[in-house]
Amino acid sequence: MKNPLIIALDFESAGRARELVDRLGDSVSFYKVGLELYAAAGMEFVKELIARGKDVFLDLKLYDIGETVKRTVAQLAATGVRFTTIHAVPQVMRAAVEGRGSSNLQLLAVTVLTSLDDRDLADMGYRYSVSELVALRVRQAMEAGVGGIVCSPLEVGAVRRIAGPGAVLVTPGVRSAGAGKGDQKRVATPAEALANGADYLVIGRQVTRAEDPAAEVRRILEEVQLPR
Ligand code: C5P
Image (cartoon, rainbow, N blue to C red; front, side, top):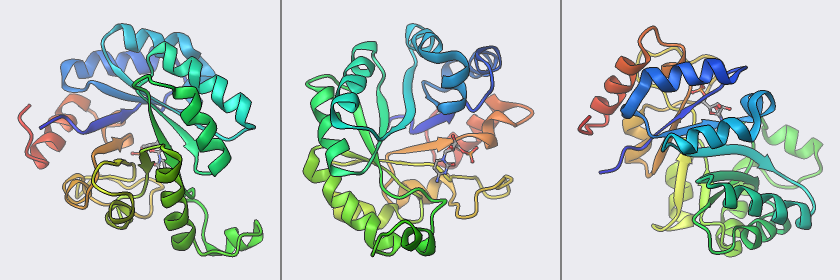
């Protein structure tokens, strides 16, 4: 069984991120670079991770006109980024699929940000509830050929039923029992998320803020019963 952990490098500098990657060594092979670190350290740091043999999930949540999305995704694919995110809007997704071409970049659709509730959607002019819009967008993502979805561990079962067995499902909002939740309200444990159908777990602060991050990774891998 493959290692399902993706550690989120939510740091303000390449130096801090590098320090964690050094400490985790071979126990982690997949890292997420989000907007903060991307703004601080850019593609240079992404390329450094790739050169070290790490897989990179560059979480850019793209949403722009088709031509821009297509050309940006083509650049990411050429650099060797493994996962990236786009908003689950049909035009954006179709452009991203074109940009990916035949590369092995896995696109992940972000359906509805978990910071939005039904009222926020109504304010934005949508006539759907969050769960209805998530379901619609999962179907549209699969139709567009995106093939991957980022979703909460609490909705991963429902998403799997719509997206089918071949979809790549990635869930943040995962915490071991007893670990601090931070600002996350809706969390599941790593084992629950995998049992509900997740392929990859994005874990940030439980590991990055731990006194001994490598020990924390070992604890999570034990919890999900993977050989270390
Ligand atoms: O909470 P934690 O530190 O584990 O967060 C890990 C990563 O998951 C962060 O980079 C965060 O942006 C991302 N994320 C999230 N919740 C969502 C979507 C993304 O925590 N609903």
